[in-house]
Length: 254
Image (cartoon, rainbow, N blue to C red; front, side, top):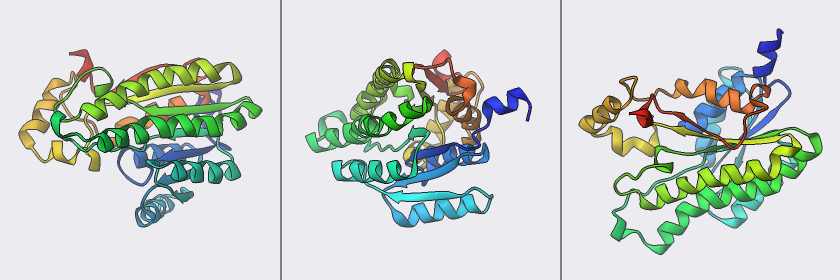
C-alpha cells in the first residue's frame, strides 16, 4: 500500500455510526466499511438495523448492531456500555430527526426531543467514548451539521437550532480532545434524498428549486458523501479539527 492509500485506509479501525440503519448514516457506514473499518451500527429499530447489516454483508462488509433510542438517557447509556465493550476508534454522530412543524405548533417536548437527539446524545457519547480514544492516542469524531447550521428554513426551528448547536459542539469537542490525537469535525450535507427529507423531495418543484440553488446544478447523491466521511475518519485529516465541511454542491456558496 502506498503512502497516500494508507492515509485513507481504515483497516484495523472500528467505527460506531449512530443512525446507521438508513439515509446518510447508512451511507457513511457503507463508505467507512469499504475503506476497511469494522462497523457498529446503532439505531432505534432492530428490524431496520438487521436489514442494513444484511445489505452491508452482501458487499462483504461486516457490521454489528446495537438497538438504542438516543432520545433517552438509558438509550445513550446502553450504547456507551456496548461500544466500550467493543472498542471504538471512530464515532460518527449521524442520528437525526426533524418533525417539520410550524414555529407556533412546536411543543416543549418536541423542542427537547430535537435537542436530545442532535446535541445531548453526541455530547454524552463523546464523554463516554473519548477517554478510551485518548488512551490509544488516536480517535475521530464526526458530527452531522446542516444547511440550517447557518440559515433558517420554514417549519424547522428546533432542528435548525439544534444543528447550529452541532457546529459549536464540534468546536468544543475539538478544543477539549484534539491535543490527545482525537479530532472532531462535522459534515454539513446539502439536500440528499433520504427518509428525513422525503417531504422535500415529494414536491418536485421544491426539489428542483433546491437543485437550482446549488453551484453544481443538482441535488446530492449519497455517494457524494463517501470521500468526505473517509477523509475525516482517517489519518488523512490528522491536522484538521473543529471544522465544518459543507457537502452541498455549492448551495451555501450562492
